[in-house]
Length: 460
Ligand code: NAP
Image (cartoon, rainbow, N blue to C red):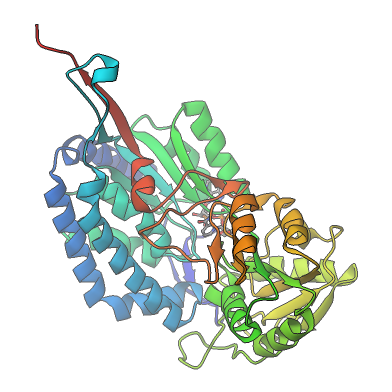
C-alpha cells in the first residue's frame, strides 16, 4: 500500500510520502539504540515533565490535529476532537500515576531468608509499535505514553494511510522536550516490519491490527525470542435482557455500532436481545440507525462519515452480500451509497447463521447483526463459541445475570450497563484470537519492563 493521505470523502490522493531509505532506517535504528542507553537513566520526574509538556502542546493544537485525523481517515470531527482530548488525558494520567507504578514492590524477606527482597521495574529498551489507522492518535498514544514514562524508547510504524498523524506524533514528543531519538516515526511499508523486528537493537513489539498482521509479527517475535503484545480484532457481543430500558439500550446500541463510523475493535457488533423485548428493541434500533445522518465528517451535523479506505468498504460489502445471498435480511441499509467517497450506511441484519462469513469474523463498518435469544445462557453459548474475545457488553438490572455474565463470558473486558470503551485508568486487551497482553493502566506499562527480582542477604 502506498504511503499517502487519501480523502475517504472523495477518494482522491491528497499527498504521497516517500518511504524512508535503507540508510535512513539504519540511522533511525542507531539513534534509537543510542537514545535508549541514556534515556533509561533519566528520572521519573523528568519523564513526567516531558509527558505533561506533550499534553499541553497537544491541547493547544487540538483543533488542527482533530481536523488532520478527520482528513486522513474520515471519522467525524466531533469524534476526532474526543480522541485528541483522550490523548491529552492519557499523557497526563501517566505523568501523574507513572511514578507510583514504577515504585519497587517489597517481598516477604523473612520467608526467603533475606534481609530484604523486592521487585524493581526497569525499562527494556527500544520497542517497535505497529499501529492501525482507526484511532490514529489514541492507538499510538496508548503505547507511547506508558512506554516513555517507563524509560523505554519507541519506534512507530503507523498504518500507511495516516502518515501525517504519524509524523505529527514524532514532532509532538520532540517539541515536548524528550531527548533526541526517544520517539521516532518510521515511514515504512508493512513488508519492512520484519527487518526492524529482527534487528538486535529492537527488543520487543506491540501490534494493534488485524489477525494476519498479528500472526506475522508474533511469528517473527517468537523466532527472535522477543516479547510481543497483540491487540487484534473483535466481534463484541452486546446482550440486552428484559429488565433493561429499551430506549436507553437502543440509544447506546446505535452509538456502539456506529462509533468511529463502525470501525472500532470494541464496537458492539453482534446484538443478542431477549425474546420478551426483541420486537420493541428491533423496531427502535432500526428506526434510530436509519435516522442517522451519513455525510461529510467535517460537518457537525454528520453522525457517520465514510469508511477509511476503499478496500475496507469492499470488505464490508462482501460480508453483507454473502450474508444476504445466504438468507439474512437487511432491515435498513445493506448497500453502498453511490457517488464519490467510501460511504456505507448504518445497516441492521437479522437471520445471520453459521454458513455466513460474518458469523465467524469481524465486520469493520456500521453493520449490526441482531439475534433473538431466550436466555442469557443461550446468548453466552453463541458468544463463547466465537473465535474472538475482546470486549463484551451486558444490559441488565438483574444481579444474578450480571454475576453469570462476569463469570462466564470469554472476553478480556466485560462492561455492564455502559458502552465498552478504553480508559487509561483500567486495563485493555483481549483473549483468544483477539490477542494477548494488556495495554493501559499499570499492567500495560509493565508489559515492556523487566520485573527484576532483588534479594539481599544478611550482612556477615
Ligand atoms: P492491519 O491491516 O493489520 O494494519 C494494522 C497495522 O499493521 C498497519 O500499520 C499495517 O501497515 C501493519 N501491517 C499489516 N500487515 C502487516 C504484516 N504482515 N506485518 C507487519 N505489519 C503489518 O489492520 P487494519 O485492517 O488496518 O485495522 C483494522 C483491524 O485492527 C481490525 O481487525 C480491528 O479490530 C483491529 N484493531 C484492534 C484494536 C485492539 O485494541 N484490539 C484496536 C484497533 C483496531 P500498512 O498500513 O502499511 O499495511
